[in-house]
Amino acid sequence: MSEWFDKLQVEEIRCLFDRAEVYGKRMRVVATRSPAGDLVVIVTDFPVWETLALYRQRWSIECTFGSLKTRGFDLERTGITQAARLERLFGLVTLAWVACLRIGVRLAGQRPIKVKGHGRKALSLVRYGAETLVNVLRWDSGRLGILAAELIQAFPALSAA
Image 1 (tube, rainbow, N blue to C red):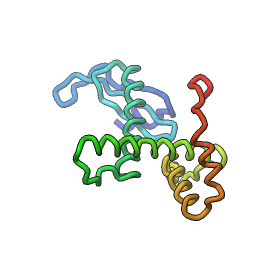
Image 2 (image 1 turned 180 degrees about the vertical axis):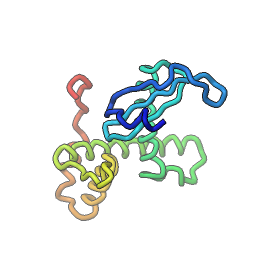
Image 3 (image 1 turned 30 degrees about the vertical axis):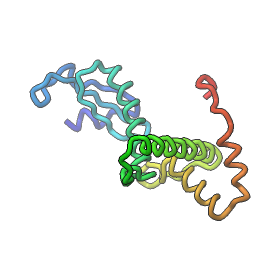
Image 4 (image 1 turned 90 degrees about the horizontal axis):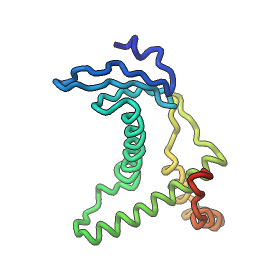
């Protein structure tokens, strides 16, 4: 099977089987390489193009939840069980996440995140922003005004991004 994947280029899409039997179900096997060069194989019953669009959305959501949970804000460890308090906590953590992402995006535009030997970035945009924000709050309060100015600016329109 590896011969099907060896020559697959970045963002090239290959539907290995129009319909293959996977665990007793008729499915499509779709393969592509991410911009980072990682092999992505998806087994689905959706059409090929719909599958890729859905997977991109899903991956974005997975990364967001990952940074809200164990790889970031550690939201899973809260002992809060009351619905109103949980709602408030989720709201505050979401605002903090957006702030960290916004700062991380700006900083990455000024000074890109280092890429490790395996080809992945050393840290996420959210982590980049969070670490910078923590360092500014702890050690460099003179830069706080710059970060605050970034946070109160309106987001650019989607067509301008």
